[in-house]
Length: 211
Image 1 (tube, rainbow, N blue to C red):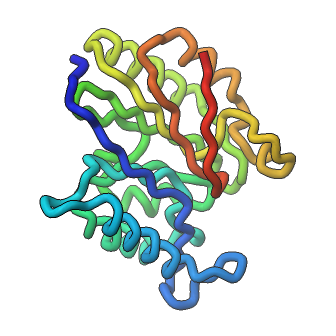
Image 2 (image 1 turned 120 degrees about the vertical axis):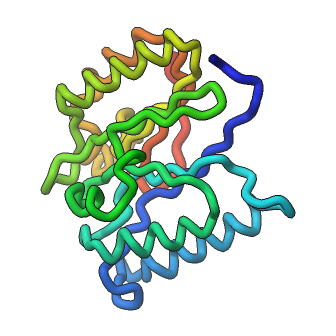
């Protein structure tokens, strides 16, 4: 059932960690240092005397740049210091088999996380070895089933994926987006209890309104 209790979600995306913390540079930036700086800002801005002001952490893909076990373990250790459960989904740089061995599979996409009258639907849009994304028939069936179940329970819904399902007006970014957004929208447009769709991948902020 829907609740009057606020649910606060913290999204961390595209950390692109490498096997070695000191040697991992992407476009000249040490990704390990970048993530640690982000986490320090979170501790400054999103904590009070009682602890974190958010309920869940959404790790929306490209956690690792090289798909190494060490990079996932380090991300899990760093972000675990925030003291909240982490929900995971893979991006185009991630290695799903390694994620399954290393992370909590009960909160790895595809999955549904229930909190405070919300259903948070975590989806896997990654195509192994490819940069763009695509939802398989199995992912779309999982999404539809989760939406029907959440509607029957009177829950709000947040849907999370890695690849952007809407154009951003950038030729190169939109060439590596979700390749079958029509199939995605043909499912979600049949439901009126979806409140937000959250994605990563684009390394920038974007907000738009649909319906």
